[in-house]
Length: 510
Image (cartoon, rainbow, N blue to C red; front, side, top):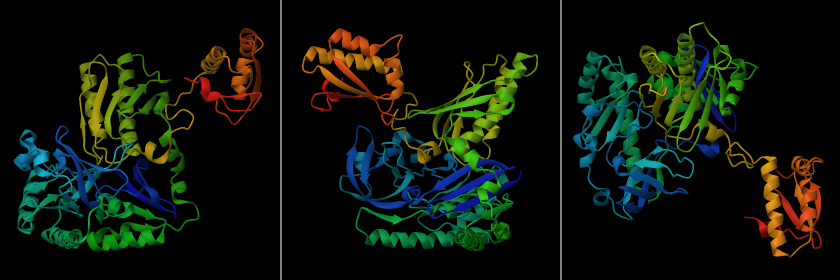
């Protein structure tokens, strides 16, 4: 598989695109006002402990208090790093039922060191954990731990055994180690150098934590470009293109320190055409906001993101296929599975996801779809769990969500529909206005009105075949002057007292 990384930088944002076989599969963007928080370490003050929820809120100096659940007290939460083997974790981590109650561990106004594991999403503040993990190139250093864990993605058992044996004498006293996927095949010297760098960083931030008043930021996780290179720039990447000289120097310096063999694959792009235009990525990025995604031969997906979950609907569309209906449906579902997996990675969708495939009668075909769906996620770096196809043709999965999806990061709710994607029809709005005048009639305060509405709504209400404004004036003995205003949204209206020109809209609204 051909894999490339493209880094585009301007004064206002940095963007990273990951290409697999000339297809965009991952996209990240960072702006000065929305820098990433996951991995940041804070010294905070416990503001509230809630035994009933087994949670606490911690002031870390941000606008919203951070949320700390009992399950994140003294346990490795994984974050963006490779997951470790649960069976090799401490017993108190696995047997959650025996965890100590949070009110016995934390007290109000207590100062604690925490790390952000999930960014603020919607109205929620950041989620934090008390166990600190410091990621390196090959290892993750875990203070106040004494275990060595190996990434599940290293499937070769002899290699797992070798890495564990290599890391054992390197583990500092009072620290645990998580061996990352990239450590596969690396030597004793590679791991030793990584441990040395991590210990030096820990000593620096521990000194700052001991001398700084809470709440305060102790350690800022590496910026997006550096962290992406640390986690993604591996032996399978053929080329890394950077269009900014400063970022190019950062990448070269990082590669020189941790992966000198990859330095020759880093290139500074000097072309006149913008880097993302060279790969025709801008239209693809623009389509990240659209709910409709076309697949081969006329089939398409509808992706709807809500607060509770994400639903993805598969439609055959214009795809007619062969004479055998079951085979046609299977082909559509298999193609859809590939595109769904790509879109989930590309849009950075997390949480609960329900995929509604076209119903298939054959159990063998359902199993084949499930296996293909799992295979499509083999390169996904986020932790996930996928359930088999249900009798209703649904595949349910959960995917690690540490930050808002690109739809929420790159767009704002519509000011007219408040993010619903729908507005009231003209007939509904006309009926609402009629009810307003009925209330005004009952109050018997005014008789002459200016009604300000959108021109389209005015046209609908004053249609010759059904002049609703004329009927209002005739029934209620009102004088209503309709004013067409192109600046007012279709689902809004204003009513003024024609004698005093006072805005009386709110007087009879319900």
